[in-house]
Length: 410
Image (tube, rainbow, N blue to C red):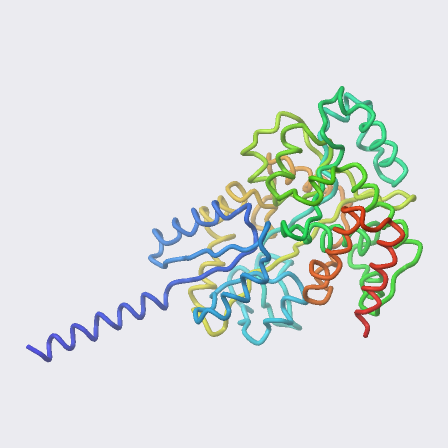
């Protein structure tokens, strides 16, 4: 009898260990899709019996801090997100080779290390200056003309002079606070306007200069003037204390004519039911025309080679290759899907606008994730906040930014 009980106990412990091993832990960086992702995880568990746990960092919390804490927790995630070379270099010793996985047959946007496929593209994303077309129409501003600095400046001035008539609290809903965790908006996404705006896709001239500690003097000067323009026509309260939610609410409620965010915010935006047409204008920071927005596959799911590799890859395969996975990505999470077996069309306002620019062939690359780890948010982010505070003027901002960039090469 004791032997039988011992065998039963051993079997129970083996099954429990196997079940625990089958669990997948995912650490991801998109607060705005957490609800949809958790719902899909539940559906996946019901369908496969594999328990999926989703841990989220991002928005107003630093994703990289959350990820590093998970890596040190004793239970490393099986899947996590990297954002380009700096993220890959940081974790490459832990990342599994996914070459030959079923999903790899259906995309040209995988993250590669030489010939090895190591990253699953989360989505194609894009951003520019989202606009409320109803407000622009009332002000007599054609968004198609907003393709250079002078046109944007004139539009901002006109809208500012009509704020009471149009019901605006600000012209541009823009955030820059360090305490609110929004330096990814400034030190990464806005800085990429300088790195890639107006350049041919794949042109790395400017990011290469930055990595050498240098800037293109005239281009950088125009960029800094553009940052100052955006800040001038936001409010100090929004710049310094605004969160991802309050920034969105100002735009969705018609209190701001423009909104500095990308199509990843669609799931949150549609909950606020904006009653106006939305499009994207370029971040047209140059005096010459910049007729395009910034679009790329900027983040990838990687698999922990020391984790549950087979189950993790099976989960990733399910996203573009099952009806439920496609529905989650396309409809529930509102993604512009990076797989050619999925037709990306969307009625979600920001994503639809990104797809329109993409289909027109008017897009620029994302180069910000080639910056050294922590440089954009941690180093540059503080200078944007100082400008927003009024602690420095635009000339001081330009000098400090150039000094910080020069430090990369040291």
